[in-house]
Image (cartoon, rainbow, N blue to C red; front, side):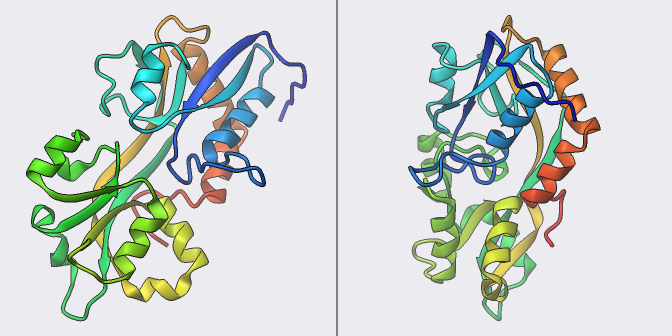
Length: 248
C-alpha cells in the first residue's frame, strides 16, 4: 500500500459518535478508537489530497452538529436514519452488519420469544434507529408505542439482560459485531443468552458526505474502492468481528 506522509491542506472533518465497535469513546490512557478511527488513518495513508480528521459528536447531536458545519462526512450511516432534511449524498455500500435481539436463556424460551417484540420490555440505545420501531428514534414515539428503556451504554444493556430481571428488560437490541466481541471476551456468558435468529435490521454501511463539500461522493467512492482493493476493509472486518447475517 502506498503511504503518503505529507499532510494535505484540504481538511475533511469526520463526525462520529459512541457506537462500538465503530467508535468507542476514549480517555487519557486510550483515546477514541474503533473502525471509524482506523478508517480515517487509512484514508490519510492512501492519498495526499485530503487530511481526514475526527470530530466527536453524539447519536442525538450529530444532525445539529452537521447542520451548523462542524463536520462534513460521517461513516457507517444510512440516509434513512433521520438524514432526509440534510444536504447529504451517500457513498456506495462498503461494509455490512446487523442488529439482533438477545434475552436471558431460560429453559422454557426458544426463538418464538422474539415473535412479538412489542409486547416485551425492550432496552436499546438512545438516539438509535431500530427496525422494530420503523426506524423512528423519537423518544416520545418509542415510549408511546413500546415498553422501552433507552440507555447510553451497550455493555450495560447486555449486562442488564444477564441479570434476568424482566421488570427492567426482557430483550435488548445489540449489534452483532459488539455481541461477537463481548462473547469472545466472556465465553461463559454465551449459554446464558438466547440470541435471535431474526434480525432487527441489516446494516448496509455507507458514508454520508455534505453536498458541495471539498470531497465529492465520487471521490469518496474512489477512495473506498482503493481501500477495498488494498484489502483494508476486509482486514478491518476481521479485526472487529464484522460478520454478515450470522454470529460465530
